[in-house]
Each structure stands twice: as structure tokens, then as C-alpha cells.
Image (tube, rainbow, N blue to C red; front, side, top):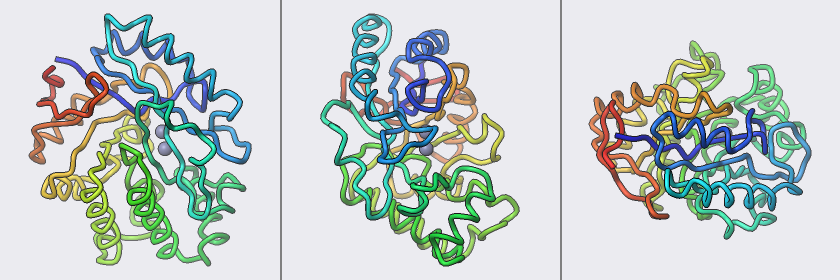
Amino acid sequence: MAWANYHTHSDFCDGTGCPEDYVESALVNDIVSLGFSSHCPVPVENDFSMPMARFDEYCKTIDVLKNKYSSRLEIYCGLEVDFVRDIDIAKDIDLSRLDYSIGSVHFLGREALMMNTSVDMRKEMLEDSINRDCSGSIKEAVEIYYNTMREMICTSDINIIGHLDIIKKNNKDNAFFNENDKWYRDLVIATLEAASKKNKIIEVNNGGITRKKIDTYYPSVWILEKCFEMNIPVTISSDAHSPSQLAAGFSETAKDLNDIGFKEIFILEQGKWVPKKFSSEGIEI
Ligand SMILES: [Zn+2]
Ligand SMILES: [Zn+2]
């Protein structure tokens, strides 16, 4: 039995530890297919993205590791690419150098990116962004979030949809909205329909749980149940920012997915996305 993870940061962006530290962690955690996904360079300085000047070094570093460890595990070079409405961030990056990409929405518009107010930071930052970028309306903020994600799904070549509902990160006790409200559910369902049509993989990201930021997956279980009904492919990911987080909680996540009904998750094998049977013990290779 084995595991795979494609949402892996490192000291090329806001993670701790160099890529080789993550490879060493992968080897002791039975990970047989490991993808690196640094935050892609963005056209404004911040403390979490990889600087554009390091992109070449990043690709070369992962290449060296691919060769060095080729007899022990498969290693892939990816990026977590930001999608922000009205800005084509991916246009400056040579995506052909990547084996795959994760598409994520962290910002509710150009101003939010420039001011570095990501939806997954502190609650006050989300409030700042709602007031400044969304006329003070949480509903408008959520609409912008999911509309940006739908546009990403429909117009880009990303393989994996990153933390689909991270807009809920600061929504403890329904502080901003109620996931049961029809308008919210309709936005999520429209996003899933686009994902299904465009054959995107949705990651089941347990990073918020293992880092004790939130007590649910991204996305929520009710959304995963819809994914199962709609036959949308899923993969398990840790969104690791340190080597010790690489496969944290995978066994519980796999069990929860089995309980929903999922029998297969998707992994990269010899460069292709393939379904694999899995249980709480791991993936059948
Ligand atoms: Zn992210
Ligand atoms: Zn991430």
C-alpha cells in the first residue's frame, strides 16, 4: 500500500524545508508519487509566492530530484497557480515546463492581490477584502470567488482544483454565510458542473484539519457527496508546508472518502492521471 500527494510547498515559496527534505519524508511515509506545487510567481511582491527569478531554479531542482530518486518514487514538477479576475497570472509562466498544475483562488480581485489580503488569511483580512473589493457584501464576495473559480475551470488547462471552498475558512459558526442557503449551494453546484464538464480533478485537501485551522476538509463533506454522485475524480492532498505534514491524516481522509462511497482516487503514474483503488491503509498500486 502507498500514498500520493500533489499539493506540496517548500522553501521556494512559503513552506519550510527544501524539496529534498520532502522527498525524504515521502520515502518514510510510503508516498510513491510526489508532486511539488509551489505558489506560482505573481506580479506583486509578497511573502508566500515563489519569486519569478527562482522559477528556472525550481524546475531544475525538481528535475535533479526526479533523476536522483527515480528508482524509489515518481516525482512531478507542478505549481499552485493563482487565478484572479482581470489578471492573467499564468501568461508570464512557461507552463509547458510543468507536469501538472493546481488552480486556486486566493484573492477576490486585483486590489486584494496588490494588498495581499488572501481569503485564507485571518478573519480581519477577509473583512478588509470584502469591504474594499466587494462593496461590503459577503454574498458578492462569495459570488466573485466561485465565478473566478468557474472561469479558471472553463478557460485554463489546470489539472486539479485547489481547496475548492476555502472561502469558508473563516466562516466558523456561520460568521459570514450559511452553507445550507440555496444561493450558496447553487454557486457550488454550478462550479461542480463546470468541473465535471471539463474533467478536472478535485482535491480533498485536509491541510486545514491537520494544521488545526478548521475542522472540515476543503471541500465540505456535502460537496464531496455531490462529487461522488456526479462521478467527479478526486485526489487526496495535504497542502504540506513542512515535510512532516506530507501525508498527515491521509488514513482518516481515505476512510471518510470510502464512507461517502468513493472507491478510487486519482494519482499520477508514469505521467498520466489514473484511478486507483484505495482504503484507509493506502492506495493499491
Ligand atoms: Zn492555496
Ligand atoms: Zn497550497
